[in-house]
Amino acid sequence: QVQLVESGGGLVQAGGSLRLSCAASGSIFSVNVMGWYRQLPGKQRELVAHITNGNITKYADSVKGRFTISRGDAKNTVYLQMNSLKPEDAAVYYCKLDHSDRPGHYYGHWGQGTQVTVSS
Image (tube, rainbow, N blue to C red; front, side, top):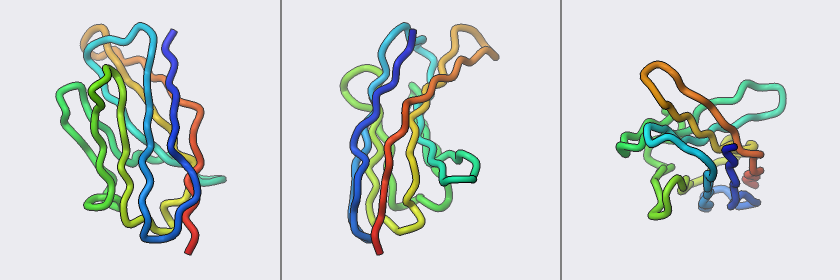
């Protein structure tokens, strides 16, 4: 069974920084993508950034140049460095792991979410 544990959310002033961490454990296939999504009440969950096992990254336009996603030295960990935070970045942030044991077949797992609050 795969588990994702997130940490690092909290309250920060606009213009400040936070670093989110996510550690995945369990039986994880080597072909995988780890990412961060965020969700506001009543809104759909949206992709913030993701990174493949080959370190290819993708970012939402709204966070490009401010957020950086990276893999940790420990296997199956991912970080989201968030700089120049804006009030509109406030949301619950979720870590997600998608992994595959064969072409075309991906299995998705979510973390429990961590709250990010940005005061203006």
